[in-house]
Length: 563
RNA sequence: UGUCUUAUGGUGUAAUGGUAGCACUGCAGUUUCUGGAUCUGCCUGUCUAAGUUCGAAUCUUAGUAAGACAACCA
Image (cartoon, rainbow, N blue to C red; front, side):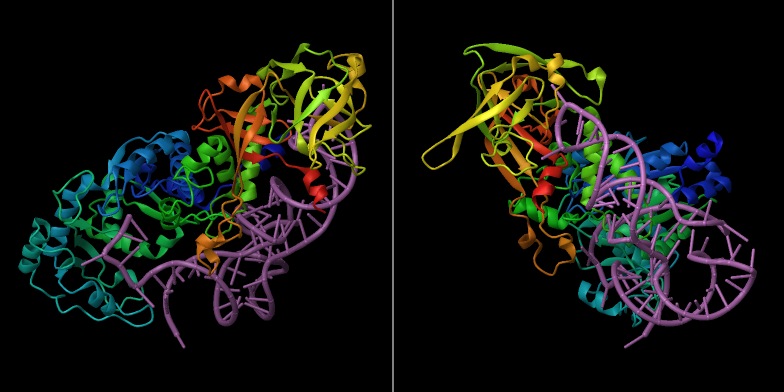
């Protein structure tokens, strides 16, 4: 019986792992496994990249291979060192270590030499038509293209012009190098794809002004894989139609049995957010969010600042899997993953977000008691700590109702509730100001019901969190919600900026938190009991505590109420 | 009137010709000094049609639907 369970519990492979195991079985590439994560340093990494990172690094480590980080930095117009640094930080935060760091720009000379070789073989030519003309000549997916008049330029002339493309003599846009393949191919990428273009308006962030002719993706990417010895080149579905060209370039230059294999998987789409770099950049530049690390952003740095743990992200990625089906993943699953992760690790603390005074009328004036409370009921090793109790407390405004429905298990006149880790108290009334707002709630405590005493085991429906007014700290708490108000902003025909959720950020400035949080450090995780998971924002200072809500606790009372 | 790819509960994902399973969501209950967590149960699915086969989610064909491809981006 047990052995059957073990057999069935054996994790099923995704289609990529199946390919890899088959390649291993076939002894391809001498049984070597090598992957790479190839970001372009033109933006910050987001949760979609995390999916690719987990696959690239995961496959390598699961099959005894290596994974390199390679920056695909072939377009100096868009790229910057700022991004190179953040990308490395984010990958490491996710818990991965690359074998080597490479840059496509390190291969510029090799790529150049191979391109010259291709020209010499008569398989590439310099076209000096405009981008518009070239595009027009490509035809459409259903109409074949027509040959460029420069297609049969003599080899010597091609070589000479190619040199000039790189010296600065040729203005930007005036000439390109194209592979000579098939202008009538049903695959648009075979209609004499561009291999090189001139960029002399921007210096490259690593090579400066050395190069004026830069290789294009289809040529540079595959060859970079080949130079490095990549065996499995994993990328997203939109590169599927590029694969024949990837293979074509490899075939032109390979000189052994080794060859890299491109495999495409589905990219991550999350509900209620956008994943496009362009749109995220727009949100940042137009000030619609506070930056790339705004806690509402799906960037890795945004999630980190929001309070997500790397473990939560891994567990989410594990749950959604890798397939060829273009899926819409429910952001609720990401939220579930972070709750699952933080539930095991976050210290429970008391924090009152919307405070109202609670006076224990029969408690001695000026007395203070130290209560012991557990740090994490899910983890005994987390230990206990002390919290102060006194006559004047703060409680959550929502936890009091003067006239309550039957199922309201909280503070209402005549009803007993437990103050977590302290006493059972009975509500006796409240005080209101001239406008009818409740300013104080009154209750009497039962001195025999202190936590741990026999009487404290009395059945009481509700347990409330609280802080002692004289001993608590003030804090700012930022409540975040989904960035967009529609499930799939990308599919909406309205401008995505009009779909932003106006309530995605609520700042509370009058919150009361227990004194133990005085020593909390930026990014520390906590559970504010009965409310949610929170972490310390980097904006937090010794004089002003700032917390971010990572995710709320599941709230079955709120659900009950909304019926 | 192209080429390529995809289609399994509300969502995501297994089953690799042999009992359609798991997770999330939802619902009901248990339990609890967090209306959290835990634990239990329930609901809901193979795009359509034909074929091959003892047997099809799986193979074949046709249809339907969705996506990718016509950047001097990656």
